[in-house]
Amino acid sequence: METARNTDDEAGEPRQDDPATERADDPATERADDTATEPADRTAAPPKTGWRRWVMDTRPLRHRPFRRLWTSTTVTAVGSQLTAVAVPKQIYDITGSSAWVGYASFAGLLPLVVFALWGGVVADRMDRRTLMLVTNAGIAVTSLLFWAQSFAGLDSVPLLIVLLAAQQGFFGMNSPARNASIARLVPAHELPAAGALQSTVAQTGMIVGPLMAGALIPVVGLPALYLADAVALCVTLWAVWRLPALPPLKESGGGGPRAGWRDVADGFRYITAHRVLLLSFLADIIAMVFGMPRALFPQLASHTYAPWGEGFALGLLFAAIPLGAVAGGLLSGTFSRARRHGLMVIVAVVAWGVAISGVGLSSSLWWAAVFLAAAGVADMVSMVFRGAILQSAATDDMRGRMQGVFTVVVAGGPRIADLLHGTAGSLLGPRTAVTAGGLLVAVLMLGLAVAVPGFRRYTP
Image (tube, rainbow, N blue to C red; front, side, top):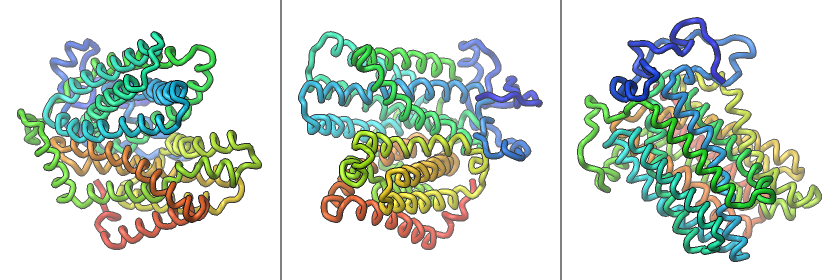
């Protein structure tokens, strides 16, 4: 995806005055000399014309450190999904119970929430590259243990739950450090493009990974899936090792020995004191809690869309949103250059709500898939600009904590939605619940935009 440019900077050549690039290929030199500071916000390149303006903006890949971070994300986006499929499959094979699959998922949520919040504090207090190395190593070890227990045929559900909880804890600490590092690796005007690149590969992994898992399980078995994830994590470790040092910036007041829960509380106070950050979180909560109907997909597939085949309908419903998100990412050239970040979030969330309502009103599976794909495009736009707001509106010494809260919101919102939509679907019927949820998203987001005009006017 790297494109050739005419200038030295755009061709990816290291520049002595650009802190977002490296000055040598030797890792030791990079770590000794290239501590990443806030990249200079240089004037953006002239806008593209014609069809090129619609294509994904790959300018952030000029910067070698970001390219390495993005590469590690690309590799693990697929590998992590292999484990995400293998664990519930193994638990179901052992127990024959979907309830145990649900219990295991819930057991993984608590350490994810706790360690994402605490990991955000740690990411603000220590070198983020070091934290990513430690936590990626921890994830790799748990993947190897998953492989060992499966290869040995232990068939122990408690062991699987413990390993899953440990892996989610490591991921919770890794995610804030990884996401908070982006603003140190690319200039500010390229943050939306960087977010689109990261989100697109993550969504692609959600499509390719499960498909690969489904195809490979009958051929090579579950142990091979765990082992493939562990190998992918070794590539991630190499890529992170080659990053420049990312210590707290002296001018931001970061660093210091503290990394306790009082600092977590400081992060929440920081959010409430900065309205644009608070509203970016509220926008995602509104969209996901009231407008994510995945808990109703099985019921819709078995009743509303049964003539198309239950299995086919269920797969299409689950795949449509990430497919739309990937399409939105690949065609993100225009919106990733927009300046009104707050307005873009508002428009995207309202579009998500309208599209979800369209799903509820659709008696045809194909129209439902089209509306879900449109919702996926809107979700990609929302993700890109909410991420850019978090990177630009927060100071470096708070970015880790903001990303920790972001991880909790992204992980927790859909789970709350599952409970809410499952209950509403039982009482009102699935199509009514989906339609009402989408409309509620649009109304609440428009009300928020009217009540806080500063958010829709926000530019970095």
